[in-house]
Image (tube, rainbow, N blue to C red; front, side, top):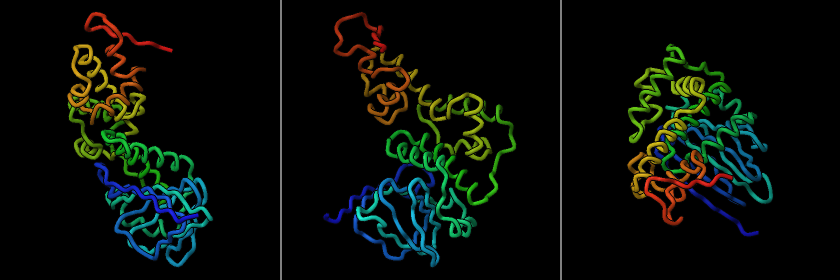
Length: 277
């Protein structure tokens, strides 16, 4: 079997994420090295063995690995077919430096919910235009990591319902331009994780879901006015037409083109034919 090195890397527009790195290696072994950022790692296929602080570790299936900054480590395939991994490099705005010692002691975290949330975060980070969703998911991942590292969560003192209402008002004011979770947390003087929990508890959906539903609602009206789909996408705050289509289909049950009857024959402008199954 020939050695493989398939690598994809990018820097998303999400505060605190230095780099997203996806790789499939069959024979490559990392020498001892360090990172300035936290390394949050999940392995989808195979396994990795590595040394951290002179102790040997591995990546059992279903675990999450958190390697602290400035601590030397290496890495090599632990199975004949190598490994496929997804990595996030996070700066200290997401995890403080005083957690390094705890991470050195326990780099492997056996937590199915955390593993699931990290996977969801990678999915959101790969979709341009879904930065608010990614930031929300990253905030919940960070909170759970801090719980594992025995850090005390930082909850804002303001009551949940009032905080949720203020965040909703902010989102209503910024439907098109949007805002980051960090910006909202600064304006409302609340921890981002507390902000997401308060909003989700009060309204039954996450902040990014609320914002996308507001945008789709506006898009429906503009589409029925006869505006082009691409123009509607940018006018309502979506990254591009594909971004609008993905969320439109999720919330309306059909694509923008089918919603407006593109190619579906003649009927009066301002009406829509939607087929449900």
